[in-house]
Image 1: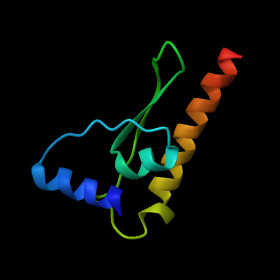
Image 2: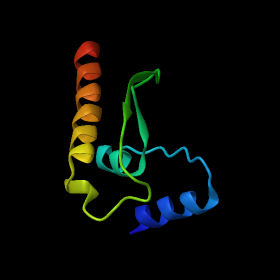
Image 3: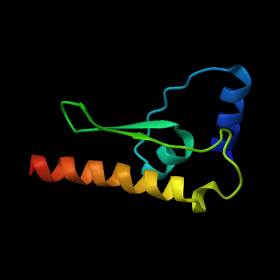
Image 4: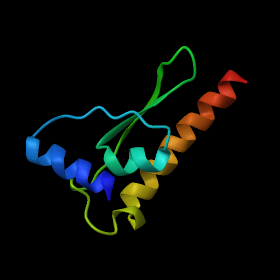
Length: 85
């Protein structure tokens, strides 16, 4: 519920929000655009556009946009980790 409240607040204020999280699922839910960062030194390894209305509609987490965004973010992080190894 906190994530939904945050999205509603941002929409009401007409503001832009920069939110940092370690959760792929939270990033895909909150963002219209997610940046995946590498470990130190932090650099952008991927940018993922996430479609869908904001605030999110009920059931967003079961939809294709959410599932696809989670997979894209996870794949980018995994690929960067493999490059670093």
